[in-house]
Amino acid sequence: MEYTNVRVEKRLKQSTLRAANTRTDLTGSPVKNLVLLSIPDREYNLIRRHLEPVDLPHHLVLHETGEKIQFAYFLNDGLASFVISTTDGRSVEVAIAGREGVIGTPLAVGLNRGPYRAIMQIPGGGLRIKSAAVDGVLKDAPELRLILNRYVLIQGLQIAQIAACNRLHEIEQRLARWLLMCQDRVNSDSLPVTHELLAQMLGTGRPSVSLAAGMLQRAGMIENLRGTVKILDRKNLEVAACECYRAMQHFKGGLVIG
Image (tube, rainbow, N blue to C red; front, side, top):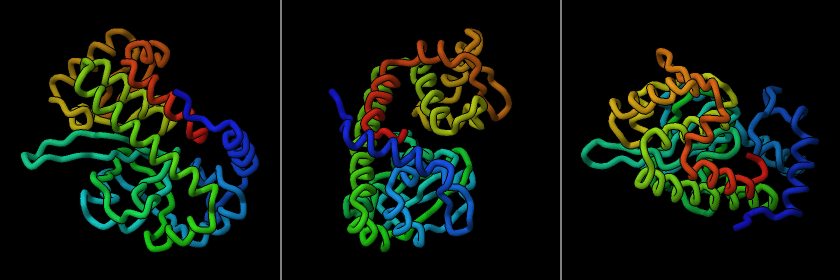
């Protein structure tokens, strides 16, 4: 199934190339978020005055399950997880976002609460906009509204694919898939993640993650360091991952920006 609108894709690519090295926030710092780099200058100037630069440290909660969303966040770097928790204290990651997207997607469709917790798993920085300003901006920014609506759709597909992945695939396949998705967003071979974090994100036990990570390391695909996993052989890691990674890459093709 094809999700890409060719006409929109061409226009967004042109906008991205035009803006990539020139767009800055109100402090003069460069903008790296691909959504903000993809919209026309008129729309960026409209939203720019509402964007507040913020540091996003490890474990910062961006919004809680069921609580009112105060801000939408456009990450420049770092990685956020969307997590579902149960009453017995267990949790599982259902999606991730980096500089390719936005945190606070319910605001894009007129909702002010989300069904999951959004939490920073890899620290970074970005720009935030108050929820009250989002609706007004979107009314006068059709390209941004289009991109965010598409992002909501693709994120929903990602959530569904991860749900199937967690149910149907082996832990080493799921681990390879997660590491690839993470690297795509942070653009680094060294990922500052622990086995404990990976276990929480994959909804399994730490011993299972350590066993799977050991298998990938013995195959020469990754190196397990203290508090870090380093990707050594991405090509074979893609082979080791389940089909879900390739499916989600196909979904991302509809976004153009990621």
